[in-house]
Amino acid sequence: MSRAREAERRARDVLDPVHFDFLAGGAGAERTLADNEAAFARRRLLPRVLRGAGAPDLSTTLLGAELAAPVVVAPTAFHRLAHPDGEVATAVGVAAAGGLMTLSMMATVAVEHVADVGVPLWFGLYLQPDRGFTAAVVARAQDAGCRALVVTADSPVRGRHTRDLAHGFRALPEGMVCENMRDADWRVRDLVVDADLTWDDVAWLRATTSLPVLVKGVLHPADARLAVGHGVDGVIVSNHGGRQLDGAVSTLDALPGVVDAVAGRVPVLLDGGVRSGTDALVALALGADAVMVGRPVLWGLALGGAAGVRAVLGDLADELAHALTLVGARRPGDLTPDLVVTP
Ligand SMILES: Cc1cc2nc3c(=O)[nH]c(=O)nc-3n(C[C@H](O)[C@H](O)[C@H](O)COP(=O)(O)O)c2cc1C
Image (tube, protein in one colour):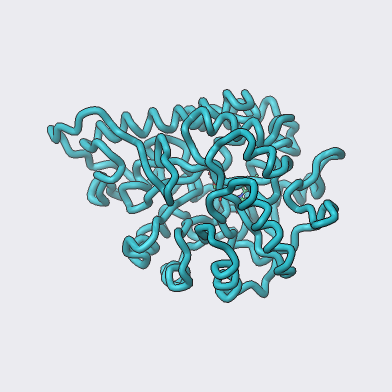
């Protein structure tokens, strides 16, 4: 069992069961949630030997950020459900691992406090129908030091999370709010998910900010082409960790089509089901420039705060480095699709 999987098992024991289910669960019958992981389990590696790969080198530059490994923390809401220090503890752990964190707009700690930690930060943005409010949130994230915007495109409606519906879990506990959803008067606004959003809204954002913009939640190659056509700086292959459209294709199965469509014009990232360094290696070999991890970081946070986050990311990097050498490669960029087979 990979360390990330073991962390999930142990996190179940320490978290409130309703909160564990919120963090772990998916939409509908959780088919997509399960298939994200199963898709990795379906692949096997066809390693090369005697290539003199030497010591592995995971260092990666992504949109100007220098990373210890091609592993980025995905935006996830409500870290204070996992640990009292919430997103600050996550940031300390990510910084210690030499990583990059995407802070969710639905964070339970204000972006300014998280940025104080000094970790490279991207900001996970839900475009709001009130463009003035969206622009204010973007300006706030930029002023705090966020280096890119990650626009969530796969949530025109809220996900139907089966476990949350069963528990009646709808609101954050007393004393926790979405600190980045405050308006100019510092009142907390409700998140609006908007089924009227189009690529024009991405074009508007592109014209509003000088920050790099990545679009997250792309599965269809045609959308990948549209994203590049609208001037985005990165495409993230994601199905929201199986929390939106149940029955959507696994991200690993969608990856090659998106990689083809993007054709190297911007970085392609993948999230969903990455639970080991070998999983990361498979995604990198199939054309991802980096992977993102969601839940494993939350399990590390629940188990050990910043140290737990650092351990989860460190384990993933160690496993990736090991697997890299075993397939005969030195750097992630040396990986090629022929190293992955589906028997
Ligand atoms: C508890 C939880 C909260 C999430 N919140 C957000 C969010 O605020 N914005 C977003 O774009 N994605 C959100 N996601 C999706 C993640 O960014 C990511 O796509 C997914 O977790 C990756 O799959 P993995 O958990 O299998 O690594 C959330 C996922 C989880 C599990």
